[in-house]
Image (cartoon, rainbow, N blue to C red):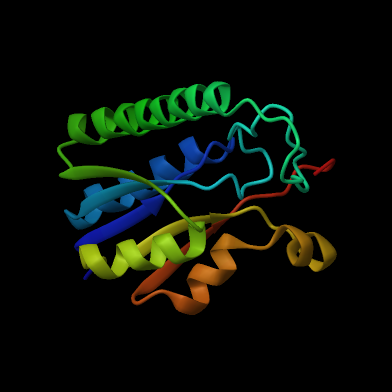
Length: 165
């Protein structure tokens, strides 16, 4: 059935639950896992550092931005994100599931689909926050993009969107 399961994880509160569901599936199917984090800042609660002095909506060239400070913050963010993946990796290995981790910058939806193709995934297990209407239109939906562009089957795990989101 499914032997290679790709699990995109972000910094949201649903990542632990999504990982546990994918791990349970991998154990039952005797499948491999690929845990993937995309350094994109696309998720609404992203801790991705914005260059100091730059506005989150737009940045005007010539405005004062401390790029050295931003570079250090970016490195800290990337290191923290990789540590989260390593923690998930340890949990999977304790269950005897062959697991790899990968972290890369890029557009989340495209990068997930590209990784699925390159790694040969036959299933992507991805979370969905449940945004609809204008929120989905303005915030976008990585899971929707993946569902329509993935080279393999996609299992969408639906989570309730926070009331104030």
